[in-house]
Length: 460
Ligand code: GLU
Image (tube, rainbow, N blue to C red; front, top):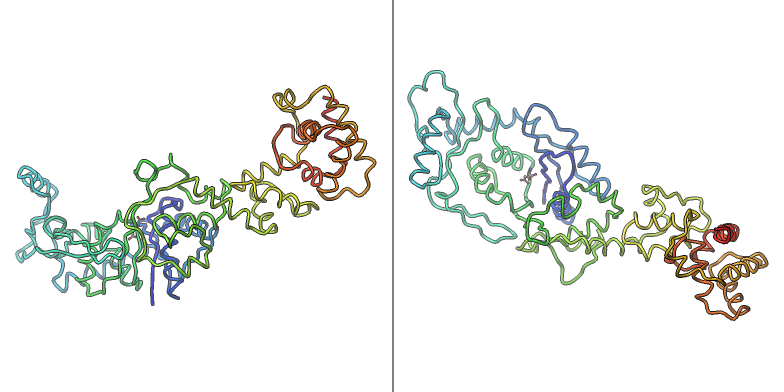
């Protein structure tokens, strides 16, 4: 069985890059009928960081990801880690080191004077004497002294690390008994039965250390997939300036979860030249072995394009629900089908759509000066009055086409072009010269409101 996990360090919110990692792990587990676990890496051990977990679960809920089992908090697992530290001490694979801070500093200084990489010199590795008086010990693991460690990475291929360049007998538990990062990650992944680790390649250099822990404890080594970071257009790590980093901000900005997940899965993974992936397709197609080797570029235009696609293809009932979050209540609006059909092709985000809906439903408070200058001519009041009269006399005005017929009648009667009525009418209805089709707008707001808006412009 494939078991994956998402193991965020608590930041108080779910980072957009974190969601990508979570998604890839989720897809791989679900595709294989496996498990997708959630672990909060809150290693200060003073308290459970439940707020961190809540923020992640909230974001998961919004996008529709679900983890299996209970959430593990590293802060609750101290006793487990201590047990495994003790196991390594008992088996001679770890040892106590009594070196003081001053001794360590002195060693580092000598090494850097010799232009060597600072590393522990193994002075307590085989120590059997009496511990120096009054000193506290840290626990170090016995790492290989020479040779290489190869990470068989599903994305990067075989990555060979030279032991001399990256390892020493690193600390697995501090003097106060708290374990260190790479130790707990390896212990947790092993005990949680994680078979496939998909994570950012900023963790690649940790992997050999974690492999040392796996080996010392006799745990099988999982498969690794180190995913290149998400970059901005300048090739730097994504930052707040490039776009929202908090996943929930994307909800506020009017993105749909489907668009966001589609956007994220394509950051670093592809399947031919397909751009649109439903969750069903992602689940059928995603394979971490196909993750790209090079960094992927965050491109908000692409996200907007995907979002427009998903808005266009969202059923109106669902759209109504989504728009409520943006302050638009359409449940009981009798013309909501016409309204949504008219706007869903024109909106990049739900925020944009909500604004466009309000522009139609709310009577304009002002008329745009430039629009008046351009579109409201001497003959305009007469044309609008004639049109209003025709509307009053018309029976059965419901559909956009009904209103269109009245407009046609009026232009024929007055022997004018469509623009002569279109421009002033648009100003009356929308306060400006842009917006969706006028017949559609009138059908949505109804004849009384149309007449009231024409009246308001005539009195202006
Ligand atoms: N806690 C780490 C992070 O948030 C992830 C560790 C891992 O995936 O192994 O970057």
